[in-house]
Image 1 (cartoon, rainbow, N blue to C red):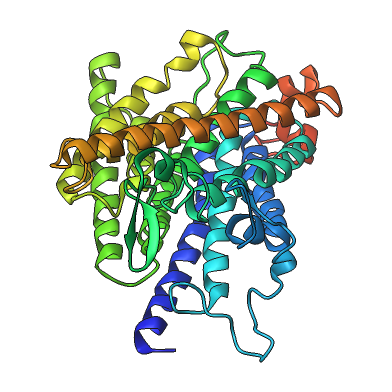
Image 2: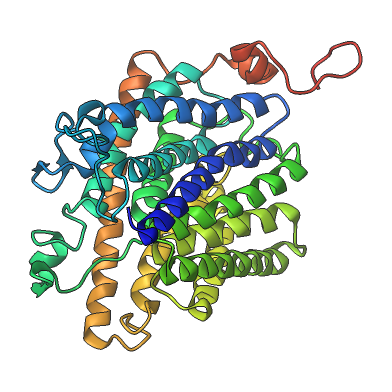
Length: 438
């Protein structure tokens, strides 16, 4: 391995560790936003996703996402690299070298962490009311039928990628670069606007509708029980996101540095965008709003981190924070119980980031000198976003309805009233003197 490849390998290993940290960080973020009687269950949903998705990814996830035998550009053969066969060590005993020039096993670990956090994000829509086993079954099936196919379509050379045969290539034609025929207008999803945030946000919306609302929804005020925990979770998510976006350059190079800087710029601007909306709408700027604005800005920049300048990242992040702050109100208007604002933050900001990169991409965006080709990029970004929503929405609906018709989603009303932590896990996070649960 060359010195450059060794440095790149080190960076991606660090990035994979940072992204892995994001799932426990999310459990803090969601746990603090939930009630005192459901904080452990909320955190367990993130840790449960970490356990289930890791197992499935090793067995079939890598193969379905990045296998070479594609089924119509939708998904790759799950058995080609089943159990990571032929993906880590070659027959001669040497490590398989990946596309970036370092050991392929490093890429496998990095991509595994993306699948985990994508699934964990969905749990925020289901606080206080669902069976833990139903959640684990759902996430195991959803990652297999929704996330892996979408990862293949966007990043594995499938229908939503820049490769020949993709939707963009069929609509806008192809060109030949370095001996390879690719789409003339290449869709941009640097680190997961469609694969991660739009897919998870859409799944959260569909689940909130099918599972139904909490019995206290719109009847009493639902306040976060521990705002310092929320702020800590947001800070750790921001830290982990540096690997999420910076690592998606797959090298320790200038693009990784640009992605890091753009990520920080958008997160900071996201705070401002959210707090401005809060101040105008509610008359005050809150710590919950600041923490949520961080995440909204991070979500917005995810698909665009390597394609914008720091200044346009400020614009993207600020608009993303403001739109997400407005988006969380959708659940009250349309009466779906997205408990911890997954739809408002991840779907709304994810859609804006995916579409916004078509407007602001450096030299190629519609508003930044791209001209007619920039408009075409804007169009293909919309089409890719819609396709991701449709895939995730349909798959989620089928799985959710099947679970509702069989083992069911909801815990019993008494357990929901008394607290899901003790009912499902036999534990409580907080106790008063004498042992009574707060």
